[in-house]
Image (tube, rainbow, N blue to C red; front, side, top):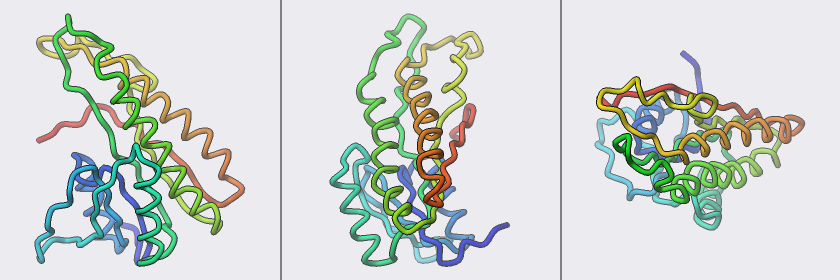
Length: 196
């Protein structure tokens, strides 16, 4: 595997479907994980493979993320990495449902929340001349969902694809913008992910 001993990594959306196993993998590789989620943190059992710092913060709020950065720098210093997993995906609806539903809420979390986290933590890393950011997009950033592939059919909200396309564009922009500051920025764009 790889060694992240004493590297400080911030993970937004740390209690989600991808967030939990990613936090565990980072901790097992030796990283100090600063786990942020909108939901209140739950207690971590003593025998858990990780014991990250956990706190509740809303990625839609620059002030809340700035507060997280201040606490993080006091306890562990400037982060080495950021993984932006906080996201909102409206439940699929039947084919006759409104594809525009939940537009603002999805854009606010998926795109603006990612931009806010990159702004707060990325600027801090750029100021010290190093860092790595991984944003999380989606296959739907570049390909429209084919509703015919799913039993019973559904309509994926338009905002999900639009928000993830924005994350991909933002990632490309920041990769070029922070390249000379030693901060790498990449986007992981997975396809469908099962919850079992």
